[in-house]
Amino acid sequence: MYRTILTITLISIVAFGCRHKQTDSDDTLVSGVIAIAADENMQNIVEAELDVFSVHYPEAFVFPKYLEEKEAIRHLIDDSVKLIVVGRDLDSRERELLPKTRVVRKYPFGYEGIAFVINKRNTDSILSSKQIKQLIMGQINSWKEINKNSPLDTVKIFFVDKSNGVMRYISDSITRGSQDVSKHFYVVGEGQNIFDKIAEDPNNIGIVGMNQFGNLNSVQYEANSSKVRIVRISKSDKATLSDSYLPYAGDVYNGNYPFWRPLYVIISESREGLARGLCFFLTQQIGQKVVLKAGIMPITDVHKTMTRWDE
Image (cartoon, rainbow, N blue to C red):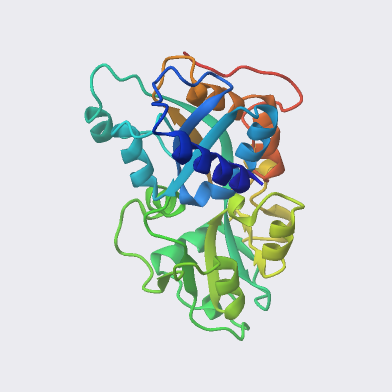
């Protein structure tokens, strides 16, 4: 639905662009036209938020660009967009590239579980966080090293793109920047669904953010979930069903699930424009309900209106 609205609006902009030059003051908190950039791994949650945003504010048109995480941040630094949705803050080097007069603020709007998904024919669906780290670091290379009775062989680890936010999280939180990792990492081919890739071979395991499944109870979520099994993970070295958990919002909130990342909206606009209005929407009640529906932990109690603007 949101893509249809964007297409119609884009045609209108092209048709009338020569007769009306936009200025910075054309947009308000709830109306106007802006572009934003987002980590390509966050497309599902961003699309879901924009669908709801457009229903509440029909005079607001937001054009998202889905890019590698670093590229999205570069767009903010270059002032090509006023708002980005990514999984980290700007680092010190990136902030040094900003003009001294630019004010950039970040606001968390959710905490996303990082899921490890396996083939439906693989029965080893309960692992410890230690085993996950050993798989990534190449200290475990075969399913037989996890379960000596397993009929499977070499573990093949798949991800969407090495430059996306999920893999940056893996680098920061698990490999700690080390290049001494598994020799069996593979990038999913362009245009290929990672869930389809995991479904091809019982030896495969994939790394995804929970929002990549699609909204809970949606057709997309059901289709992706039907292809793979989500690994239950325990913080204990010896994982059991009773102490292992899935990457859903509740177990991220309780601290039971060990692998998760913050989702941030980063804004470079001090005026009361549409970028600021969208930022407010994402971090408040309605936007937070969308986050929860996507299986991501919200930052607020979605049953109350709570302001978390730390300015």
